[in-house]
Image 1: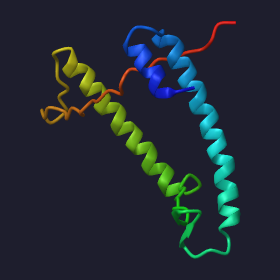
Image 2 (image 1 turned 135 degrees about the vertical axis):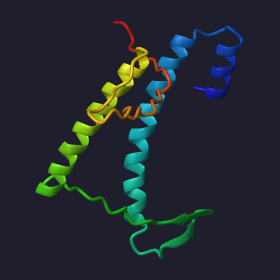
Image 3 (image 1 turned 180 degrees about the vertical axis):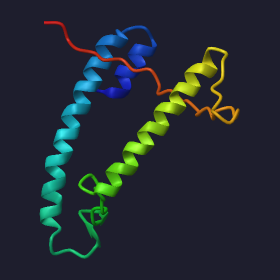
Amino acid sequence: MNIGQLVQDVMDGEESPFKALYELKKQLTTLKSAIEVVEVEAFNQSEYEDKTFIKDGYQMEKRNGAKRWNFKNCKDYQIAKDNLKEIEDGLKTNYKLWESGKSAVDEFGEVGDVPLVTYNKDSMIIKKVK
């Protein structure tokens, strides 16, 4: 499949954008799987190489995986997370009130904060009908 030609055909009205979208997403899935397999083999074959090396005309750099923290089994973290959820829920309520032209006022007469809201871009799910 010539991806550039497919895109041009869609832009020229010669190909259905729906069919092209399906085919491109299918190719993307195939490519992601292939990259995972080939990347494992590349790591295996680079085991005895330095961190940065040149192989087959390509400069390669191996990087260690990043450290990830998981606090889910920590009691203090869970308490703080629950408190945060309660605060977030209150702020969401403030936003809904603000959106409807009202405002939340606390027991001291202070107007409640309103969070900023952003939206993700629209997307399209596509499946081939059998």
